[in-house]
Length: 355
Ligand SMILES: Nc1ncnc2c1ncn2[C@@H]1O[C@H](COP(=O)(O)OP(=O)(O)OP(=O)(O)O)[C@@H](O)[C@H]1O
Ligand SMILES: [Mg+2]
Image (tube, rainbow, N blue to C red; front, side, top):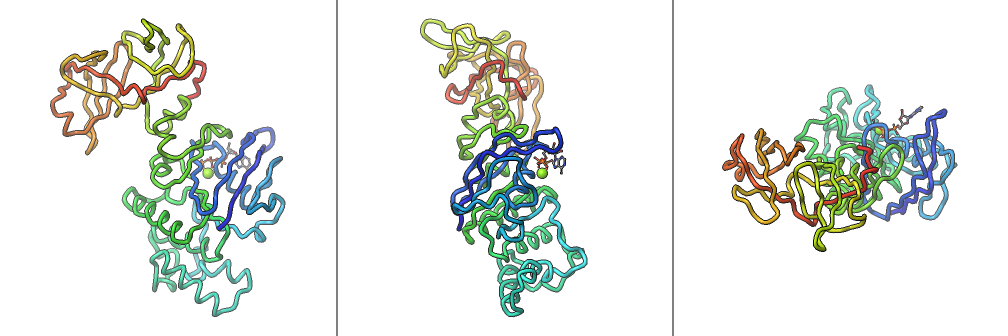
């Protein structure tokens, strides 16, 4: 097990700077996800960690040793690429054995390790198959076995599940996580899928245009995002323009035709703010109740276990999420009364508008 530190990475391609002072640490055996929209620099960070790219400044340190300038083949880092990058004409066995052959291991050792890796990813007995005869999920397993067979200090996974369909993807999320825990390997996982990051990670780094927006555990990132970008990227939030108002010692967000109580976390009376509140954080009733605001249900969208209620809070479009079984009594065109949970109704200064 190894410890990985990435320090003050800056990287430009021509005059396009794609990483700005990126620093983080992955503790021994931890599973860290780099999460963020397309083009925010996730793959570039992985390529710098495994030596396929050099940073303009900054360093990569494994177990206290600076490896920023060490060539990739001397780094002992396993990587699964965004498109798998398997050798299509080789068998499964030879794909997995490749790294060991490069390292000039004996035939016996290669045999023993490749077979153990095949067992680990549940492809026992499939060593003789051609890659082209394997399904997407099976190719994914081969790529994982190939990365793990060299017993790397660090495992890097670049959106390894993006090509798989929903059900296999969920299975593989579980498998990758349990293999990672079994082997106890320090892992950096790249994804732009928030649910995947929340499901799998010990810690998550949310990236926005080459900058770390927020780093925390999944629970905190989802429930206590520190910006409108983070609230909206991690599960869609309603972002509403409002004014921060103090009335009789209580704080409120006053919007276009609505007023909601908030917990004061900064700012002055009269400040322009943006309120972020998740659709599932509202209490919805058919009768008025304390502080509740009227909401007209324009549309009901059934998505299976949950139902979305689309409608208006004052003049603002808002989306509520509720269990389908509870949505039965809310009629399209009908009026309900809503109040968000005050603890998870967050607000940020209005200038923080980068969504
Ligand atoms: N070799 C390169 N030459 C020039 N520009 C590059 C190169 N590699 C990456 N970039 C640019 O750097 C930025 C970050 O790219 P990167 O591949 O790291 O993004 P990403 O977060 O992995 O995106 P995706 O989710 O689409 O894979 C992009 O603007 C990209 O166009
Ligand atoms: Mg990428």
